[in-house]
Image (cartoon, rainbow, N blue to C red; front, side):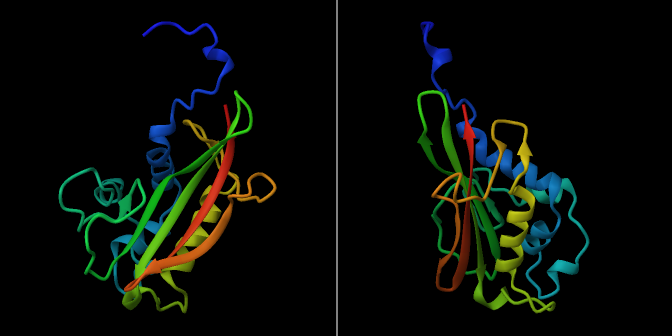
Length: 183
């Protein structure tokens, strides 16, 4: 590879391919509620003991053929038909809008999907709303050191930022888009 004398004048987005895992790693270190709602399918999942780091890591899809035991994915879409009554999350880069040649707005998508039959919990809340709330509390304004910087949920910062409902029977879902300015 030849040296580009202008490379310092252009955004390189060096960590783009690691952004999803950086966010998941940050979630592992800064939240317990989401992990309990992913691992346990009963209506009292939110009251269960916190997971160990190894238990959290085991829920992250790592490219093995069987996705059935995974609850955390680093991309969008579902390649397999899901029949189990589970909750899962997806964290992935959503878009980059270049502001100019050195700064761009990177948006991350945080998705949660829950099977209809396990969505309601004994505390009169739903998994979807609890996970969406935790995504906002954990990531909005968080300064994630490795590659992302400070994420924000602010329409003035990016028109992409929003929370929406979605999903496909028998799964309902919500997704949140948060952004940052990155060189």
